Structure formats: C-alpha cells, structure tokens
Length: 208
Image (cartoon, helix red, strand yellow):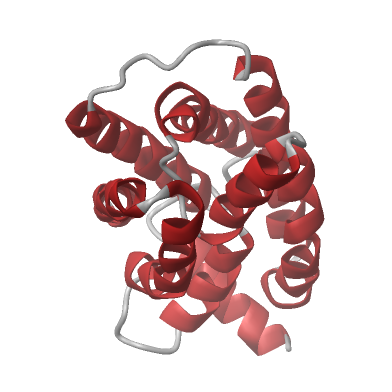
C-alpha cells in the first residue's frame, strides 16, 4: 500500500516542488475549480451541453430532478474520495474535497447568471478550454474534481495511456445516454466540448 501511494503521489507532484505549501496548492485549486464552475454555468449547462464523468452524471440528474447540481457532485463523488484516501493519501483527499466544495458552491452562486453565448462553436471552444484548464490545474496541484479522475490517475500510472484518454473512455457511455435526454445535437456538442477539454487537460498537466 505504501509503495502504491508513493508511486501515485510522485505523479501528482511531478514537475513541482514537494515543499509547496498547502495554502499555495489550495489557491491554485480554487482557481481551477472556479474555471470549471464558470464553464459549467456560463457556457455548458444552460445550452444542454454536459461534461463527462461524475460531473456529467450530476448535470443529467440535476436536469431530471430539478435539484442543484452541486448536491449530486458531493453525493456521487463520495465513494471515489474513499478510494482516493486509500491510494493517494490524506493530502489528495483534502485538496479534492476542497475542490469539490468550491465547485459546488460556485455553481450555486453562478446559477442565476445567463449564459455568455449560445453560439455552438463558442460554447465548444470557450467552454471546453475553460473546463479542461480548470480540471488540469486542479490535478496538477494535487487534487481532483471528479471521481473518474481518481481512476484515470491510478490507471495512467500503470499503462501508456494518458489521464485524458482514460477519462474520454469513461465518458463515451455518458455522452451516449445524453442523446436520449438532451437530443442528438447536444450530445454531439458535448462530445466535441470534451475533446477540446481533454486535450487542454493533458496540456495543462504536462506544461512546465
């Protein structure tokens, strides 16, 4: 267990000083979670474009039940946070909980605001870049915003595939389900947005 935790932890700290304070990590994770909240509320959700993973499932459930998306984010991510604690350590768990709380809070605060654009191309590009950059920054500084990212981080340590590629694989099923809820066009927009986001995730993690 210790060997696994150390190996995975070395990924999270890759290209960064291990002496970076928790407060500094928290600041960057706050910025990352804020970018994701902006993407969800000001570009994606009100245009019926979804993200993948637990966030995507939460958006679908929020649409069906008319409940706040932040509630589902907290509930559905809990089992993955337990996995995160077991394999990635206490710091990863705390930073991830902080990220999800910020995301849930800011999606609630931004919910009354209208979307910035209804143009599909702008929604895909701006929403995807903001989403991917926010997720990438959060992972880069030691946390995660989605339970599927925990699995992607663990799997990527044991294979030649990247985090973004694993997350894309997890989300094919979710985007397929969105066809029956939001329609074919919106599902295609969601998939295109995610392609933009996952490329941005990999770039923001790897950049020095």
